[in-house]
Length: 220
Length: 309
Image 1 (cartoon, rainbow over the protein chains, first blue to last red):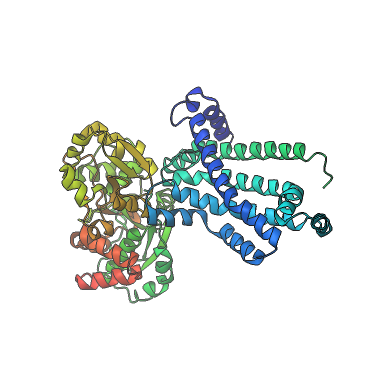
Image 2 (cartoon, each protein chain N blue to C red):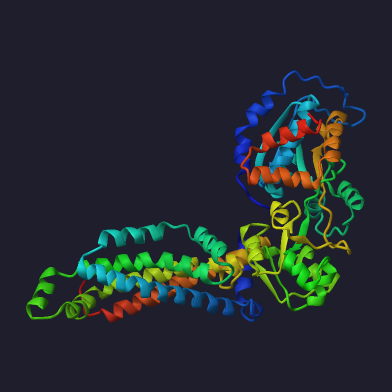
């Protein structure tokens, strides 16, 4: 075990490991790119959906259950399914990652919207605000902390799961995990896994710090 | 060897009791003392282990069928895992007999082995095997690595052998399991022996749905599959020939503990090896994988049909 960690240290710190198309720098950039694109697509789907059902209070049961369904889908199974249907491209990977990220965004957005005090909404309407004004000027700002939490959770899950891109021949940090397993190179497997974990934790810390900074004047 | 990990073993596992039950009334024709000659005795019965993929389970059940017919009590322990588990198990006496593959076993025992021809490999195996284990004569059936293209690709580029690939250097995409990128029987050897350079290497799976799907859709031009993969025939794909013998022979060979290797066992397994062809083994795999038949039933039916049981 000690040997393994010693080798891991060597693997992570050798200059050669960081450069080139199979280097950590390049793989890290790919990994972040896949993760950000998938999370952005998921946000484009999940945010409007969460806001809509939160604002109208309609379709909540259906949407939340559909979201849970997305969360329960086995990611690798989904990748293989879309791959067999559509061929070799990044599409299967993005479909699987988006399906994983949408639920966290929808449910947290919806939860944030329902947590807004009904009296506040009533007061806003009483002052003559229209529906969309209530949504964007009252509900959305109040729900923002929970919405941010949803986005953060989604991004972390996606970062941790984006290793599957390597399963269908693409890059990212998963390359080290899959290649290492196939070549029985445990140091490489461990190196890839540690890097993914570090990226996830660092992103989470950065985003939660940002969140605390943005909402520093709020009590809840 | 990291081949298809399928659930076939579960079916085989369920059928083990039935199998041992039919091996009643043992009348071993041979009665070897097993002292001076150093030969073993199968009187106490033979435990057969198999690896975690369909074909190996089919072979294990075939071994059981022919041995039972020869009056040897057998017990199949299917789906035990990979060579890393099986070889220590046979050395330790937990199992006595394993269906193996010449080249893969030799490379496991001696990673620097250079033999690729069947006879040479048999000799090299005899040297490389640890004390107490031996390989019996190899059978006709072979499950080796193959580089496969679709019929259209073969026509378009005029491909029949691996040597033809170099005419298209820098143009073709190869799909295979990740380890093939750094293997002699893979990108490395194709470059050394045939001077082939691919446009791109796509890391997919080992003769599984990804690499076959990609070949079918044209996402890769060349795919690394196994010769006994039933989809090769089903899709009319072309296996590129290997004139320079880059790919080591992978004939099926029984690996057995000395203590059980008496002439009854040797004869029964040799007869099976002489009858079973690659095409027949492929067909048996297909019956288990595609028709979802029990490996034991498939093996017994085959043995009866060919007068082996």
